[in-house]
Image (cartoon, rainbow, N blue to C red; front, side):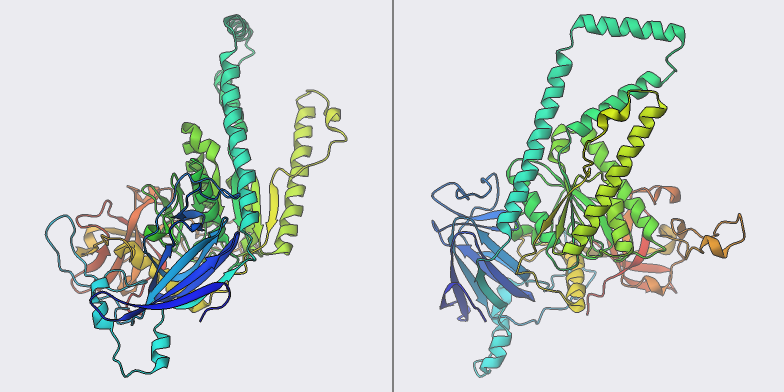
Length: 601
């Protein structure tokens, strides 16, 4: 089951259950990594041996050391999970990296998958929590006390016992790209400090302007007004442009991570935001991946400010935020008919980011980290370039493919050359200084692109595995994580069709202009918000509860949350849905897409 590294095995008895659990011990050298693959619907415990060193999960520090964390070249400890007690992690692929060396213990307990299905009831309980029933999910977090019921009989053969082991494989590797990822963090950290220093210099420069200069400017402005040289509103526009220039000069790095599927884009994004948070920055994490969104449920485009490192023992492999911003796209993939909707939502995220940065200097200096889909050709490449432009990305990290790196490098160089030509043309048209001063200067791409190697621990995920992880994401949204002491308690409620309004973005396929008469436009618009007549097709649908108060607001409004429709009664004209919270929905305008969850599968 395991290979590589210094490994010791031991068996111990579970308290009260009499059942054996296996403990695996790995001693990691400096700059090495322990990789663990755990079966879905299983869990294991991990602990760092006291005083042996520290390690990281997605850049979030765990363990303890007599010296400062990562003193051998890592990120200084500004936060994390410093603990030597056993902690539970669920099914999936995990990597424990250490800069200084440490000893890690993994403990697994033989389990069955008896609680893999969800049994939904409408029973409500008194008190603050209400509704929903406990069920076993991704890591069996809810029924730890029922381990005795899962004990296998003593006459089962060794093959059955082997199949019940949670950890499929665990091994130590010294070939890891983490040092290069740390170097990238160093580059981004330098940009953040430069943005902060630039902002301070601008403030000092503004304060240094003496009263005489101000009086001269005011007098000059009055003379221009009398001569009619200043158009009404022009002064405010000029001041607004100056503010924009100041904000851009004091903006932190805006990073976009691209690459094909299964190269570790999500992992790298979490590593970089954790490193930034440990340095007391608050970067904005934006996830444009519809199928494997780390902030919200699949089918969304989301953003969340990160002001503390992600705790993998509470948040798992996902990003937990008290103030996420989510827009419901309604599908896990983009088509030619829906690409305008996807682009529109990316632009809305960009608008919200600019509004945040204009009011929060620290947020502006911290920058953003953007994760993307694994679609890199054709329409996928088009969406990447659109995101670079809309979000004003200045740094692109290309992970795992040289061809994509070369394609983007040429495109960014071409765009920079065109931008410079346009700038020189504008100078000539305005009869300003000659552009000859720029002659001989090398044309540099406005967007910096770096090529990084993927980790050797990254493995290709099957279609079935992706589907299961999406299902687990829905389950976690409504029921919480296994390793949270107080699991969520969703409630099943009923409502009449007449009490809510269902809508869907997109009015069907849009006919190409070449297929229409001259001067005539397509009668359907993929961006149109259309009413949906309730039907049996709503069963198992994930429905977004919009903040939009009217039908016209739905396209531009983010969502308050999601409900899962579990039953539709056409005769009674009502439906039953699963909600994260009891009580009335925050809004009666609901958005339907093509995203469904089948919890019984």
